[in-house]
Structures are given as structure tokens and as C-alpha cells.
Image (cartoon, rainbow, N blue to C red; front, side, top):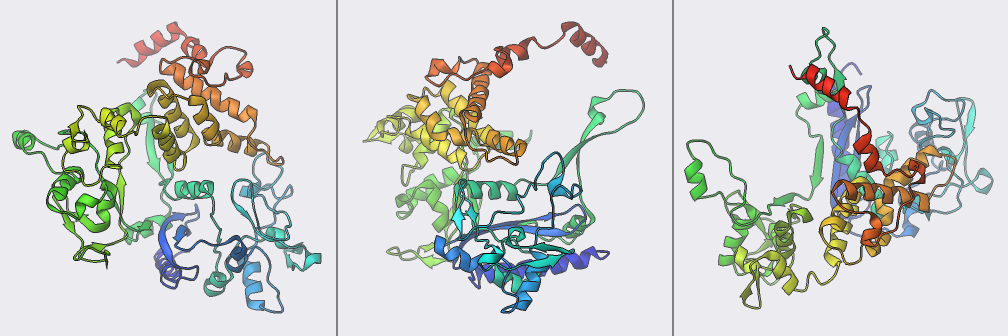
Length: 509
């Protein structure tokens, strides 16, 4: 621990070896995509969160061959037995171990849900996560002694026997088969660094600018890692970000010297570059916008065919890689930009903005009219697709904000149908909060949880200038817990005018 440079280098070497075993050695099968992030404990030791996507689907009957949550037979494999006992046992916790992080607060049980329940065979939980096999001692399971206390399979953290045997360290392996699991892991990996707000205490002069400053905590281990310029986050395959903008609406950076030149000859973007590419390349005319990075590279000026990769079937001289094209999102509030983005996912090989608005040799004046002529706006399918995209990748609060805006601005034909379809996503954080408040109770989606989401959505609509949910054909929320007074009225009346005036007078100098 006194040589953080050695710790960083050794951990980096072990991490690369682990990734090589997974990706090149294909110990779980061919890998289609992967990403990881390095984090540091407050004591300075690093650990990695790795997520991999396999090309071949793992069957439920094959999970036990890859992941185990049991003590192995000490007589058959004593080495693995000692490694599981040393690295993969969730330390004894419970009412008598309040000092442990997983038992802090008022909870009466471990926040990681240990000890787990015995189970004869691997099953899938209600939230899509697997419940691994944990046999009772009388059914063939094994036990061990730790700190003069006997532990069984209920305390074992899921692991891969092969990886544990090779690296002899704590490696928790989980099977993510549901969208909820992937959504949580992706959010955890991409959440960024820890940040804190702190106040700088000085004389009695109140300076709001200096009072609160955003601070970031770096442990000695993380500082060493950054000084050595080691990567903190990596992912595969590569992702090419594709710009979306209206005609002559791309970003421009200029100064007093080059302003006129920039205005006369705006810079090329990935979108305008695709228009020129499709005008000269017959193969590009067969592709949608987001498919272009598979076969071409963008050098900030023009698109060029890839020189590496496997040959594309039927097209001599064309090579294909695994690079993904990510089209920037556009909010429905941006109207024409939103419809332009829809057309880019439907029209193959566009050569201009006008070409995108052309349907049956007729050029429509706006993108929404072109979408309507193509049959893309006949029902709520576009709003359904928008909600689905956000619900699979964003937290519940963001999904509620989007749903509120769609109801208020986009004239959805059947908002209640979308509510019934996505109400679990819209209420997910309220369910999680209830599960934390009642750790000893199995909490699922109920009318009370859905009601909290409806109240929040109605508050959003009222703040935007909309009406109550019943005006849009949505269920009426129960506000009895708020004593019958709508939240927006409380927000508009809960202040003291005299106190605010005095505050302004004091703070203005």
C-alpha cells in the first residue's frame, strides 16, 4: 500500500490478462462488445466494473457451468475451496455487525441481501436477475468455518471457478439477461467521478461565489494511476458520433478575423459529408445514416472507405468493421430537428436536405410533412419508439420528464395506452425507494407506487402550463397525502415577500 505505483502497474497487468482471457481466449464464448471502468475505494485500492456482450446466447441450463454461488467440494478441489473461502465469502453481517457498511442505518438486514435463500436450482427473479443455485448442507452443500462461525452457501458471492483459480482474487461474475440489469450496469459504469460540494469558511463577509465550490476527491491510488496516464475507461467496438442538424444550422467557431470566411464556407459535418458521399459513391446510396461508419471513416472533412476489416459480400473493394454509428438524439421539443432525425433512419443514401423531404418525387416544405407522407406519423408509434429508447437507457425521472413533454406538446392520440405500457419504467425509482425503506418486505409495483409517478407527471404538466391528467385521458392521481392541496399551489405560495425583499437588499451589493 505504500507503493501505489506498483499497485497500479500490477493491477493494470492483471486487468489486461483478464480481458485477454475473456476476449481472445473466449472462455465464455465469442465476445461481441465490451466496456469497463476503473474505480477506487476510499482506502486507495482499485477495482474494475466490466460488462461484456457475447455473440452466442447463454442458455439458462448453462449458467451453472459458468457461474457458481456455492462452496466447492474440499475433497475434490481443495485449492479452489480455499480460494472461495478466502475471497468470495460476504463477511458475516447482521444485527450484531452494525459497524459494517452493508448494515449501516436503520436497516434490519444486509443491504446486499445476505445471507441469501437456499435454492435447489438456478432460477430467474422477478426483475430478470438470476437466482443462483445454493444447496442446503443436508442436500449436498458444503460448509466452512470463518471467525469461529460456520458459514454455508447462503454467504457465497457468485464467481467463475476458472477465473478464480487463475487469478486467486475477488472476481464477482454475474449473468445479466434482462434490460433492467444492463441498464443498471451501464449507468454504474458511465456515472463519472465522485464529486462533493463544500464551503470555504473565512471572515463574516458572505460571498456566494466562494461559499460553494465544486470539489473532486482523488485518492493517492487514483492520483498515481492518472500520473502514469493509464486508461480509466475503455470500450469496444468504437463508436462514431454522427451529427444531426438542420440546413445551415451546424455549429461554427469563429473570431473577428475569420467570421466572414466561416459564414461563406461553413465547416463540413458528418451529415453534410454523407450527402456528398452518397452523391459520388453508389454503395453508400444503399446505406442508412447510422450504417455509414461500418464501411467508411470520417476524418472531420470527408468520408473515406475503410482499408481494414473483412470484405463486404457482393461489393468488391468495400470493407466492413464493427464500428457503430451513434446519431445524436433530438428532443420532440425541437420539432423539425426531431423529424429530420426520424427521416435519417428511414431514407437510404440521401444526397441533400431536400432529398430527405422528397416523397414520390414531391418535395415537402417541412420534415414533419415528409414523415407524414411516408406513413411514419399515422399513430403513436414514433412516441412509443421514443419512450422505449429512453426507458431502456435513462433513469425513471428522465423518462417521466419526457413523458410529460410528449403529453403536453406532441398531441399523443392515446396517452393512457403509453402510460399502461411504460408505467413500470416511469415508477422504477419509487419502487427502489420503497424497497430500501422496507428491506424485510418483498415490495413490487402497486397502485400506490404508480400513484406517486402520476402525481409527479401531473406536477410537471402543471409547471409547463398544462392541465390535470384527466384532461389528457390519464388516470387521476390520489393527492390525499398532500392534504388535497396540489403541489404547484404550495410551490407558488410558500414564500415570504418581506423576507425575500430584505434578502435582495442585503445581497445586491
